[in-house]
Length: 210
Image (tube, rainbow, N blue to C red; front, side, top):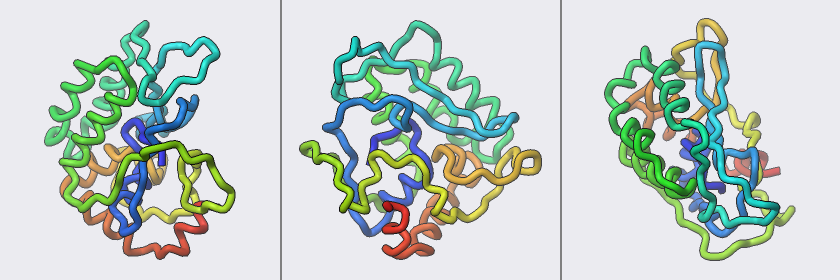
């Protein structure tokens, strides 16, 4: 599974399941994926937040070595967007300070930024996690139905509905960034993730991997 920027809910369902998940730490950077992109629910509906990275001059670069570009104040843009989207959510005030500092003082590398956010979110959600980081790169195989490194569409997964700030305007949007769940459900986030894990057997995970 990719190590993503404020990863989608499905990733947390996976790492909280009985199946051990391995985050890919030995791949080369892949553009236009959740590695540097997250999706939140804004006043205008779905909003993508993309972290700009430094150009690679045509050469492949290890995901752990990708540097963030600061030609624009993307960190302020992202934080302002998050505040605008979730300021009226029930639990934004409880958790915002945990994240605000990271956006005010982001590191040089994408992997480190994602890691800091992941560790913060992990501490805020009370579930048992089952994951490792890869020790070497394993090429993708069509026979491996559990390889989610290059999968972005999880529409097959039937996410239960929960209250979202702008749902009356745009309807329920599933599998957004984990912060959408956290800001809206707070301590009940773990119960939601548990419900997802209990609702789907290994057969459902197989169908997602195809």
